[in-house]
Image (cartoon, rainbow, N blue to C red; front, side, top):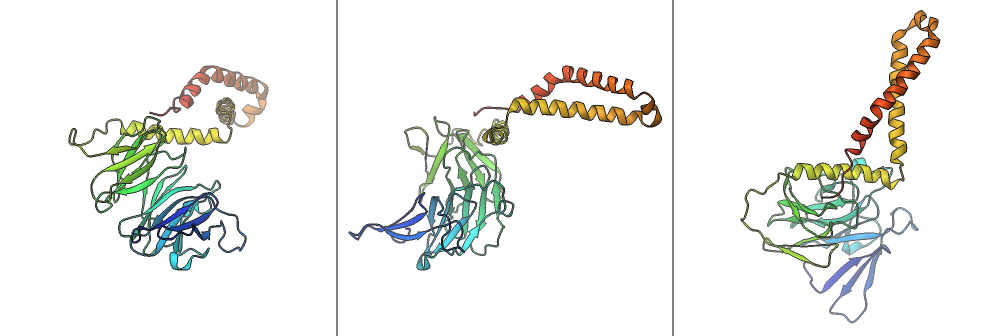
Length: 317
């Protein structure tokens, strides 16, 4: 805890917020078990992934295996949060995303949260209104493992996050623009990012065995962002197709459906244009012609359709 270095607070997948006072010989104590429904006495326990302490006030925020960031007053730890933060479009989301990390800024006025299979959102902690957020940061991928997110800079001017593509991303907090990105891990995934409290040094870790310490240099300025657009496009494509893979979608059936649907639309449009009595008089010939045209179109355009669909599939950087 920022104001009491002898106090340690942690969360776990059993849903418990636990405290430990290093000055005491007693074991850890239970502060609260978070459940999915705060209105019900026996709600489902919620697996928790992240906890952050307010820099000045006796307040914490936690996040885990649902779409909310929960804010609690430590002086009244009941399963009744001060705030339950979530973007409006995710409140009733069909597939509930998890919040893999949440963190306060240096004054406690804002809370940053990164969503699995979604974006990074900045919430107003001073006067939060349901469903609202201040900023949204895009371009990375948060699907594999538990991704962290953090502020960077002496006044939290920047947002930093790892990505499944193996890069570290830097956003401008106010404009939401990506200012820089750089390779950060041999294993291909960046999980944790922790800035130094007073100097511009960053510690990161991922799937390999090393913790990396980053310091600024003036070798190239401004940063080389020539590959940024392609990297972001690959991340967006990867998200789309991995979502399809996650539900067991058969790509072969998908290609067949697209070709069949396109041919059927062309056939219906052809029959409609012929119209009226002429169509009734030559129905047999028209049906044969439509069938022939559909088969020809399938043979001529099938490969082209496959190329367009497969052309969007891309691996990691």
